[in-house]
Length: 321
Image (cartoon, rainbow, N blue to C red; front, side, top):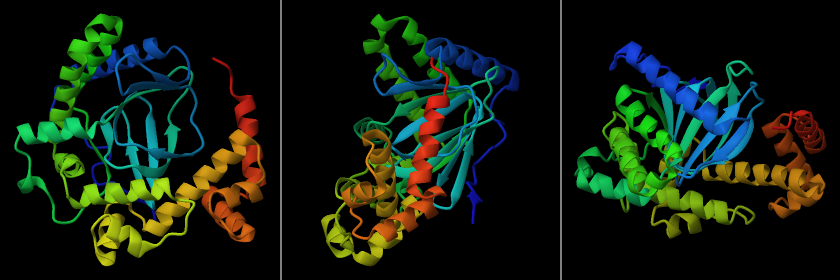
């Protein structure tokens, strides 16, 4: 069953709507100017990337790293497990864990393209700021919380975002000023209603951090058979506690998480290395070809050969530039 995040598409109540509209328009103009063409674009500011897409897309399966995502125009639908998260120019998305998701750009046209930015998190920066603000135990929940959430894009957040993007016109100022503006963005997020989730991500020995260790180990060894007792022991949790908190953070079990990693990697191998389904399935850890084909078809909606053919046709049909 699909469920919407409780914070999705909230009304912007904490700011002058005229001022917020003007600030979003400037943000859109800056992203449009600094991208110029469709695609993802790295910038001179570390960990900051911009994106422009002129048409709505089919769902794309990716592994998301911890990040703060903001749209100036358009909207995006993200599927985590059986939960749907929607964000747009009024609502940001925060990813606090490495998570396998399906994301889809919607409401994008050549005249009104999807324009967004992504700022990857540095856990050390979050931990240092949380320590300075004394955001410790009082804000840490007993149970790990979902590793993805949305929140309102207020003018207080738009202000440092705009100052950060304006630095791209003054690259000599980036080393001195970008860290200050990023710290202010993190401050606003940590002080938000869901800021405790970011604090959890950075606190040593919190349930969320242990689950982050577990997902990292699964990502490193997804080809190997899953031994849940060994995984629990490595992250210093009981098996029952690992299952409970893993599902709380990722919306799936460790086995489901591993399966998604395997299937996404198999798809990448078939597209990039031009190998057949049998080879790809074996390389990601499947011993049974029929099981691989069955699980691939269920996850991506069509058998491997048909799915890869469709994806290649889409690549060739994309306009250049």
